[in-house]
Image 1: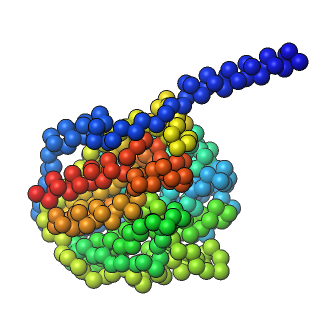
Image 2: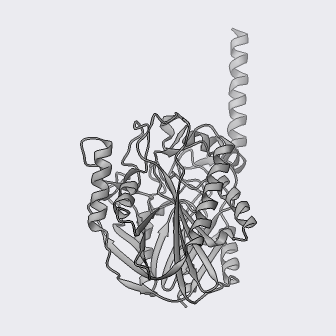
Length: 443
């Protein structure tokens, strides 16, 4: 009996020590008083943007990244890294290049859950060998939860994407580079147009709350080349989660059907980038998963505007801005979170940045997260008041979890607890970053 009591005493002591060294109380200092915000203010006040202006040319490319052998599928942690069972439709990386004067900006979107930070690092090295800067590449993903895995080199990455394979990371970076180079090789003179429309029928607030807000705009850029060919860059907030966790098939989800529909004609190219998808879900209507996918895509296509709302003329700005972050604080409960060392061990440690691409008065900001559509509503109105058409895309090659409205911080929701990784008032902090950028580029 004494041995058993002694064992439990040591066990309790061990649990207590682990708790003390790995868990801490969440710091609730208002973001305006934090060191990382002060660092942002100083850094951004000194930031100057270089602009390029001249004749505009556009090129594009897509490359198949469908796995050739059986392997893990990325998307839902509940799958526990299981391998896919079948390939329903192929997955691609797509790149659209825009040359303005003496500079080229590249929009890259992959049919993947995210653009993994370790793949971004590998791509940066490959780009450098071709004299291309990563700051000229606007990364995003369609955010399908049914694409290839094996790219996550952290414990959390393995949870969502299965066993890590460095060959997959290298293969992805190599194909990303090839698509970028191919897009550059077929540049042709073009005109650009901004277009937006509203689709309230195919998007919902997925948090299950009574006071949820919905960003229902489809925002797109139309690229019309002088040879009659054209491309559409489309962003929308509805999560690519029409396919559920039990569907073990490689697929692009509804963005794939949207792209296929656009590309039926030989002279059209489509590229879909996940917009402000945080808190936004699709409308699942149909007799099975893939019927729901088709219905979701048909709804988006029905509301997609091909009208040329505003011609985009003016200078090109293409920059990456490093974002000073609060210390990592992955939440365990309402008031307690992992200490930074424990977070980095589980999640990895990569730089955080915002991607800025401005074409005339159209500003496209790439965010390192699932950026909430709830935040987008106010930010869109703010940008419009400054004469800016704002597009926000998620998954820019860095990743800091979900950035949501701070009014939800103390609610027990998946996005605000499990996926809130960097502490208090990040919604307000990132909203301020967006407004600061809008203010500077609108002057």
